[in-house]
Amino acid sequence: MKDTEVLRQNNISDADLVADCRRRSSQARLDLADLQAEGVTAADLDGFDQEATAFEKMPSDDALEYARVALRQTRDAALEAGRSALRTVLSPVRRAYGDTSPQRKRFRAGRLADANPADVLNLLQDAQSVGTAYLTDPKTTDEGFTQARLDGLAPAHAALRTAQQQYLDADQVRQQGTRARVLAYNALDTRCAKLCARSYDHYAEHDATKAKVYVRDPAPAAAAPAGA
Image (cartoon, rainbow, N blue to C red; front, side, top):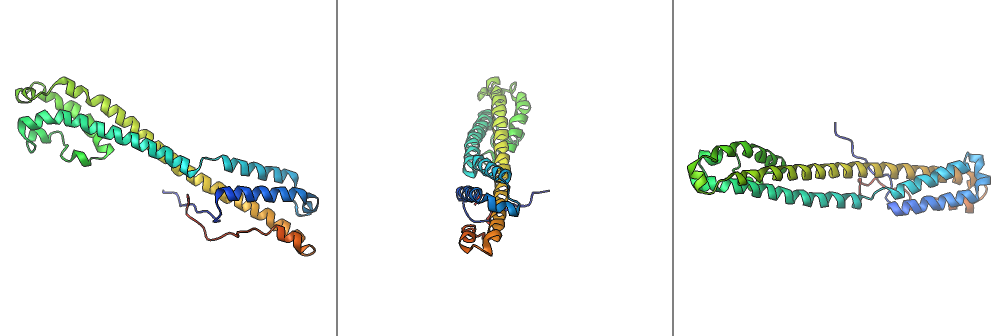
């Protein structure tokens, strides 16, 4: 089952949220003697500060995306190397029998340029066994079909398999990291809002100036998409 998309519950930036939380915590420490009447403790504020610091240290969406893109570029290079290794094997067969021949079609690589990573991995694997039939075929050996050409398929397959898995792992890390960061953002924002609400309520009836200090600005807005 696909995870439900998590949305940010406020529209302020991550950095602004951390700054706001620290400002609220510092003010609450100054007012702690008063706010204890609302259940606010020094331990609460310590935990609040720790949560803000932990959120600040989480990998940013940009950092996670950079890692994913870098690994995709590596994967794409391995993908093209795999296609090239296949073309090296297919060329002598094509020259010997033609593009539309059954001998060429045995490799199932009709649209190699459009083949995705999973397809290329399968083609590289299958071609290693299919190609052995042409090592003793005079027509293909005359066109340069050799064991050395086949030997190039295995390392190309291994490199592409590794690069593809690393890319998929990075993509998963990015998705999970973005979701975790949004959840942490919402939790921190909620904690800040609760502290401000308690503090505002404490002062609202007898010290309007102090109560105003705990009014959050900007106020929470419509939820923004994860990563926004």
